[in-house]
Amino acid sequence: KTKGFIFDLDGVIVDTAKYHFLAWKELANGLGIDFTEKENEQLKGVSRVKSLEKILSWGNKTLPQDEFKRLMAEKNEDYLSYINRMDESELLPDVRNKLTFLKNNSQSIALGSASKNARYIIDKVNVKDLFDAIVDGTDVSKAKPDPEVFLIAAELLHIEPKNCIVFEDSVAGIQAANTASMVSIGIGSKEVLGEADYVFKDFTEISEEFLNTLINN
Ligand code: BG6
Ligand code: MG
Image 1 (cartoon, rainbow, N blue to C red):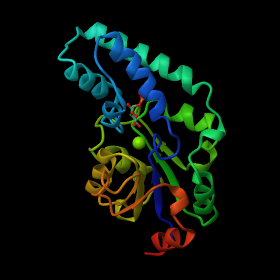
Image 2: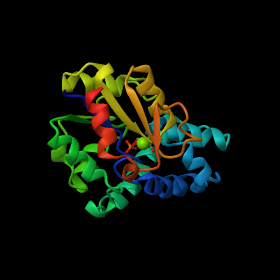
Image 3: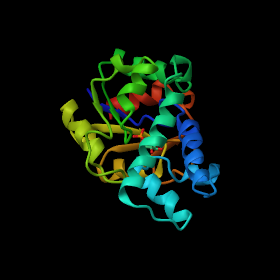
């Protein structure tokens, strides 16, 4: 049986949250707004526009449209200066093994990310060839928790949503997968991702036996 395995990018394939943190912190502090790991946690899975809106609301600030746009571009430039230096060593543990296992077992694999930098990043860490379809922030009009990103991925794979399995590290992403009637697998902590069908700390905890049950059920 061929199932659709859909992977989020940031926090699932690569740990880019630390780079988003550095870039948002620089921007927030520049506006006199406090920004710690706690705030960063709340931006996981959240689009670039929504992230800046949240930061401004934490600092009780509003900005004219052109200034808002300028700051978003500046943040992304800063973020990309970290991404430029990434290589394969920044793939999260066992990600390549599990992708290869699925590929060798004739499964369909897609990327479902909110990031507009997704194509660039999977190329940097050298896993682009393992994906049959890529859906990213440039392809969607509705951000997670809306299921749009995953539904487009299923369509591109020609696999029904109920035969798709989503790997996600954010609450919004798990909600999107659930709304799409897909199997949701949280990568992270059970406390945060309680709404997922299954939760694992990382891919080293996911056995090939478990992947086989997903394939065959
Ligand atoms: C998500 C990240 O995958 O993509 C968010 O978890 C990020 O932190 C969002 O804001 C948008 O990414 P980008 O690269 O287009 O700014
Ligand atoms: Mg993520």
